[in-house]
Amino acid sequence: MVVEDKLEAVIKAMETVFESVPYGIDHTMKVLDNARQIITEEKTDRLQYGVIIELAAVLHDIGAIEAQKKHGSMEGHFQELEGVPIAAEIMQEQNYDQSIVDRVCYIVGNHHTPENIDGIDFQILWEADLIENMQVMDCIQNEATLKQFVADNFKTQTGKNLALNRYR
Ligand SMILES: [Fe+2]
Image (tube, rainbow, N blue to C red):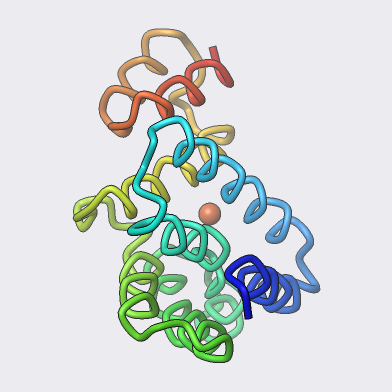
């Protein structure tokens, strides 16, 4: 299967998991869109990172429903914990290389733990997700806190611009 079809199949699987929670699908697709903008504008090495970042975007919150079911909570740690096996299974169904599965699972399993960010692929997923999550955070209440938050949490210039332009 060609690369785009495999990603489409992963998106379909994600939509099935979030069937009862359309917000999850909507949020995930916005994060994917942000990630693609950052990849393009930062001229990120697509060959090395493109597939990993797109998969991480589509699968990052995949544990949310199971976390709620098993632990009665969507708290970050439970999402990370429950997300990894579900993400792995979805990618293995599409025959992604084990090295890709492992890297995406690391990102999914740590995506609420910024101190574990260890590469540009993870950083871009973090920024793409944060741009969406900022809409419910106090940091957007005034220009000074917004600027400070962006400086503290974003590394790519494209991520910074997207966050500032959205909330300024
Ligand atoms: Fe998210």
